[in-house]
Length: 108
Image (cartoon, rainbow, N blue to C red; front, top):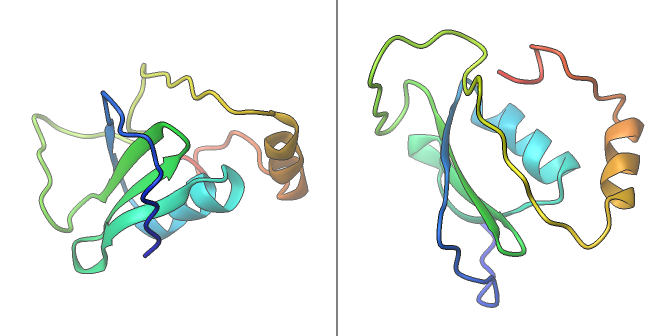
C-alpha cells in the first residue's frame, strides 16, 4: 500500500465495480500513472489517486458490493470521466507501449 499525505482531498470520488481488481490496477496504476493510496486486499478494494483525481475500485463478489440491479458486462456504460494531467504525452507512450486497445477484455 502506498500512502501520500500531500494528495489533495477530492470533493467527489467515484467507486467502480470491476470483475478483476488486479487487471484494473494494472490499467489505472500500471498504464494510467495512478498510485494506490489505500487498499483492503481481503476485500479486493483499493482507493487510487493521481493528483487530485481519486477513484475507488471494488471487485464484484468480494467485500461489500452494492448492486441496485442486474449487471451486464461491460460495466459503467454511459459514464465518462475527465481527469486533468500535467502532460498527456507520458500516458500516450504508456498505452502505445503496452499495445493497449479499447477491447472488452481490457474493460472487465
